[in-house]
Length: 154
Image (spheres, rainbow, N blue to C red):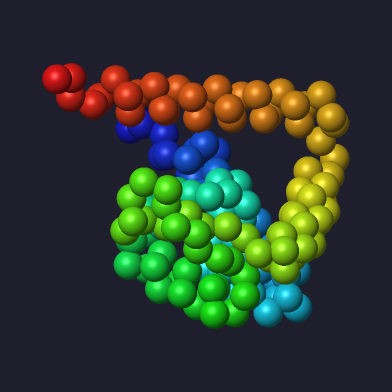
């Protein structure tokens, strides 16, 4: 008897990818009125999460090239969303920070994200939501552990 066909609709990886894509698309729709592109709001969210990071740190976090981060940073600096401050030790490096204007927009974007989360978790009890988050954190930590164990040891 041939094996049962793979059910992509019940595959964790495909489900996570689909949920992420659909949530981003809906978030984009809801924040269009703010006049920011997805690349810009992602940049601002990541910088809010890591204030004072370097462009290299941000490139790693966003999983994009340093040159792309540098170009985006230049545009956001000119638009008054972020600022660069000199690195205390390395004169070639900068720390990036949100401006007060960007902090206000990040707060508004966060409010939209909170409402969106409430909307897509509708019908799931608080205890099941907490269990889901705990399970996803466990999966994330397992993957981090797998990556750490796969690194060559010196």
